[in-house]
Amino acid sequence: MNRPIRTVSIFCMFLFLALMVNVTYLQFWHAEELNTDPANARVAEAAFSRERGVIIAGEGRDQATLARSTEIDDQYKYLRVYPQPLKYANVTGYLTLGTQTGIERSQNTVLSGEDPRLFVTRLIDLAQNQSNKGGNVLLTLDPQVQEAAYDALLSTVGPDGEGSVVAIEPKTGRVLAMVSLPSYDPNDLATHDFAASREAYNRLDSDEQEPLVNRAIQTRLFPGSTFKVVTASAAIENGLYTADDDVPAGATWQTPGTTGSSNVIDNEGRFLCNPEQVSFATAMAQSCNTAFAKMAVELGPEAMREQAEAFGFNSEYLLDLSPQVESVYPTGVEGPDGETVELNDAQTAQTGFGQFEVQATPLQMAMVVSALANRGTLMRPYLVEEVQDADYSTLEQTEPDELRDAVSPSTADQVTDLMLETVNNGTAFPAQIPGVSVAGKTGTAQRGVEGQPPYGWFVSFAPAEDAEVAVAVMIQEAPGKEIAGGQLGGPIAKAVMEAVLDD
Image (cartoon, rainbow, N blue to C red; front, side, top):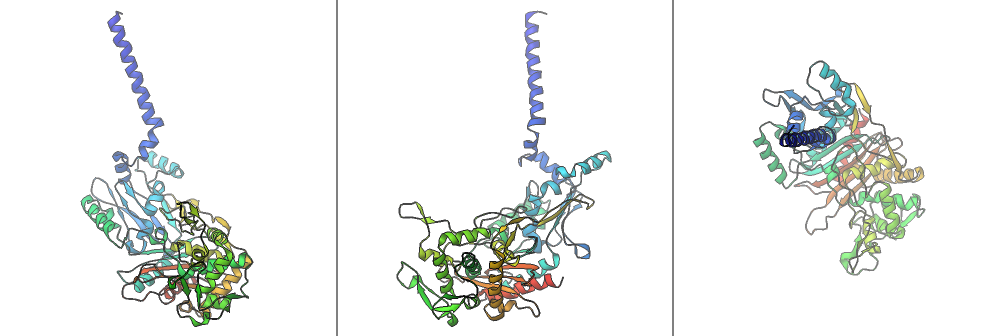
């Protein structure tokens, strides 16, 4: 072989080797990254053209289909359909070409059939020359409880209102209801008319009421007086008081180190709070701001923060739905030189009744009362009950996960007694259910903006002695109505608890 031919042959050999290395890299080492790249239109279109699994909730005759795929005569073959869109949209999310949200996103590999647990199913489909079917996802939501929560919240805040309801089974952490208003119709986004889908998304995304936001886990507000159950827990857990003690109160209290009327804490006309000493039961039942402000200062910010974090503040805990925001008990404030310093007494006093920079999601406040209902043990909340194959056979079932003991059983029992008094003889009376012991607490939180109405909150659980359900209600906007946690939130919580107890 002459020299030029040999040179060309060697060059071609190197080109061939380079091609083999590149193909090996793309199809082996880099394959997973390419398959999961959202910019990979081929993979996105292939998944979009597959029969996706169903999202279901409930059991037996009460089972509801929340999302399914139906055959359609176009290039994508299947259209995603949401039979009960408004009630479940903020949980299920939606599916469009290359985009998923909610459960559609968190459980995408199962629903699309790509999950390793569906490997055998994929082999069978391949052997039978059938298209790959996705697996199914069974949620913990109870359709009757979800409906009760949705209907009660909607009838209270109206079509232009904003709010959320969360119900949890205290012993397990199963989320029985998760409602967010305003809602939206995911069918408008799942359409194969992509121009119409984009138009629907832009309309929803620019809406000032933010219907695409799941307020149960993505909106955090001042929890107001519902946070007093955290303060009470901290006071009892740290040995400061027992539920049978008298506690300092008073008609008004000038917060330590401050001057001026803007720093005076009062009880908004609740005259039973006026004595300098009241029973702990009266302080909780009448929601005495001065009592809980003084209690927080006695405890100090570190003890208050530790108790809040034991209930889940300053952390994330829901694993099967995202994104979520952390509820906050402040870890400090900016000092005069820009450094972070601890809360002072005046700021700590405000946190005692859920103001200053304390912020909570409805799920977080449901977790607080759920832990108290479970005699102090906080369970991780979860929404996915089972992962199933296409034939509804169980592949994996979620096991309850104990996060921690938020308080001791004794503390939980004492706070429960205080909350029982609040329902039986205090501000939470709208949640009373004949023949059932209900523990509850109201909250009406100031926004901190002059002339703006407050936020309404209500938390409760029942039966108090062996709770089956814990509920948190948050009312952000209720046009045309005076917002008060007990007046508006109590009946909603009652309807949800009754739906569980009557099931």
